[in-house]
Length: 305
Image (cartoon, rainbow, N blue to C red; front, side):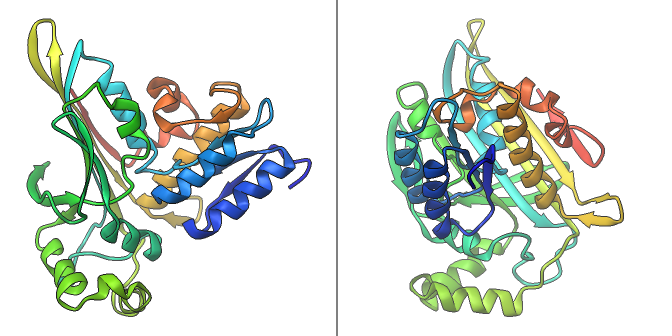
């Protein structure tokens, strides 16, 4: 790594600390895509020894990542913030199996977010909820979905908004019926405690697809001009063709996020040293970036209020 500007780790979360330690020793900046809470804690500790100009920026994907930037943008539109709810799903465009799901990203990451505790702020206090709880129904553009708590999607938002918001949570969006089938696998078949076997079953039985859609629905409620107001940011991003290749929506959004953040760092538009949270990145600056424009360009259905 010596002599390079930065390293991007797209490895499974368990390997990221090794890459971060190597980056620290080489004096170069570090970026990753992890959703794993403990991995981020390790990276943050390492960042405490960063040299001037060396940054450590984990969680640079979609969620955590872009949604943290959106959340901070919405929050600053209120005189007093009450609630901040983030909902994200990477879904097959054409579901055909009983799970109504196809594998579109890391199976390890998927299992991690379905099995690990979920950070929230509830009634003004930081807490941990069980994954797959907090079940709700929602409708976006006439399509019915369900959502439930999963781990890691908030990144460092609970820390940043503690004392500033009454309710803050993240939930994964799925087509209706998915959660009940996952609960059967995780609880009744006890695969929650046999993650290697669960991974083998999913990867052998659930097909992968590039024909997907990323659904983002973030809402913020609070006091503004003496009234209780709700603002929202909703986006649907579809799989796209780049050159002669088809890129899945989750590939587009993930790559766009981490490339934009790295580009902003190179051009001096991020904090210059140490640990950088996603919510420290300016929303408008991110979207104006040549890579961030993938969140507003062709292949994106956008609604904001």
